[in-house]
Length: 342
Ligand code: ADP
Ligand code: MG
Image 1 (spheres, rainbow, N blue to C red):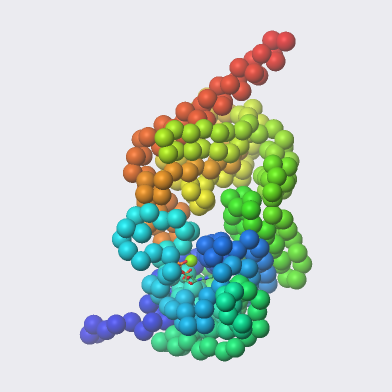
Image 2 (image 1 turned 45 degrees about the vertical axis):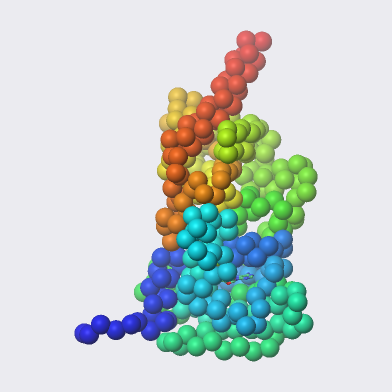
């Protein structure tokens, strides 16, 4: 075969292989777009575990009519423009791939209205060359992305979808993780027409704890030790369950770096080290931790799905987290000992 440039749809489908693993990854990308657009109300509607439909509606800043086509194209983003921007990412997205990827493996309709536009417009990109069709529509200020029949044209991917129930659990987990990171945003989640989650905006410590209780459990919200530590530009906030209450399952572990949910090896290593000797084997500590640092101190452009980051000063970050946790855990130990003596 001679060398040829791939049709746009095929190129996007290849990119989709990296970011669109299952319905939950679509939900994650779309909700992150809504957050980047400044929305403070995000509603999610799912049909049949997301196999049939994933719809996300937000009240963010919207997309102008002339930019709808661009929003659906690959390598088109409003979030970065230069290498300097790439080295200092403050948004959740920046690759300009999510909408193009999803619309190459599903039927995607993007409807939007920015505040300065009196009507809404609707766009879809279809066919081998992903030609964009634009129509007038009715929509309040904000954006709706409607994704129907995920993987209808990529049977090999569709085969990997699990049951409706399993896929929905993954979606729910994505929402729980995101909801913990943005107390200032209201979320709702419907499945097959029924509202299953409603997280109102939290504007007090009380309402924040209520959200934590819904997501991480009542025991967690009632018993957790508070973490609040900083060093230079590093900050660690959050909660952790005393080690004596460690769980039989590792479903209570939430880590965020600059507001982005993570499963970072370095951070988990520091956490394990802090808990060493305090938690029985086969038990898992539970924690919700928010690490923040200057955006230019961390590289998020490591993995397409952005699960991993690289810290410029890895050792410093590791030791900072270890020490912050160790302080709280040692303090807790002293208290446990004292109450045992009494
Ligand atoms: P990225 O998020 O990496 O920029 P996406 O493909 O996810 O790439 O989105 C492309 C562009 O479309 C974004 O940069 C943004 O300008 C616009 N966009 C996507 N979703 C929304 C939304 N919900 N509200 C406003 N703008 C959006
Ligand atoms: Mg995005």
